[in-house]
Length: 275
Image 1 (cartoon, rainbow, N blue to C red):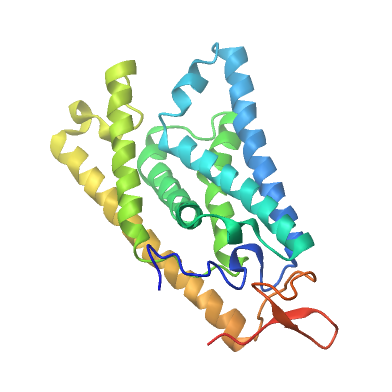
Image 2: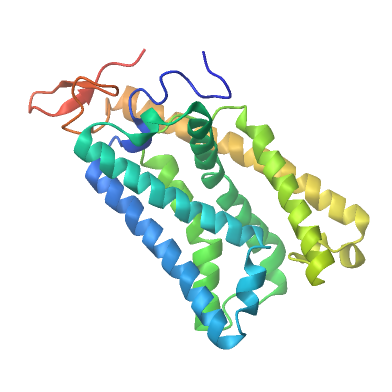
């Protein structure tokens, strides 16, 4: 029985730590490389802000949904890299021993990092970029590509490469709740720092009706993104596991425990047939 989409046992075939095409070690280092790029980008901006504007941009940065999702991406890739490395060398994943509430939060974090980046990318390039010049300088071009384009590439990596299952439908209300929470952050920022994080949230510019339309439109958009993401993951599962018979590359240490497989003809572990 699943509570909030968390089964018992949790992730019994180590889908979060394995891939159909990459070994656990390669998957771990790929995730680590992505995490390093994300944190280099974030800390470079912090250092640049300290030099150029006395860290004013940094102090305002956590008011932006783009930056919050980018930190979320970095944290997920860093943690998942560690978990995958531990699984690769021990055959057991730390997630197996976590309390149910933390397993749920990890699963929900995964759902956010495969949905929110696409929302950020679409909103920026469709709504915000036309009023800006995103490639006016080398720094501006790199910044916008890193935070508004590569973010979706990183999300796509997590959709296509690991063996993760489709996110449960119960996550949709939590995604909407997180967006509603951010809306509160945006207007708290206006009240305390006297600026709107995004121009379309300004009722004096767009009008209250348009602000409401944007809010409901973005809420609908995240639901659409969620459904599309589920569909892509379903297609990946069908193609990899049913059509091409790619059951996954497992840790050579995964014997006698959860996520265990059976020895293949070359002594490697292959997953038991799933129902």
